[in-house]
Image (tube, rainbow, N blue to C red; front, side):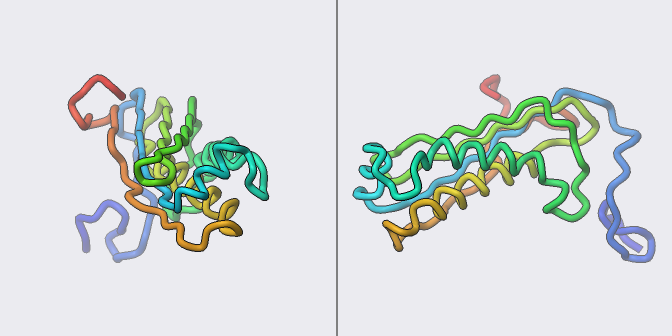
Length: 160
């Protein structure tokens, strides 16, 4: 019925069979931003937010989320992740926060969804922890910016 990998002959959703794929080292990097007012950034920098250490909590939430991706996204393969790193940096130019998640595994399928989940949940955690002080925040630009392993690597740079 379909050439789409997530549909069977009858058009029903299915998990893709990756058993024929080579086991390779795989990495994905996702990025996003939380934009807020400068006063919110100042509160975080000074450690004066009502909910405490928002950056370290959001980084941890992102790591935990990456490990749960297959429970959240239908048809995602459960993967043994070898590394998840979530880094959040203050960006006074936004003003707000830059979020980056890097996920690694050795397996038969990529970790793009895990990286996107980590960046998304880190952003949502920042939002949750800061919503009492800033009603104008917005999450922007969550995207995969690099991937290695499997059939394709992009971008074609050695920085992943």
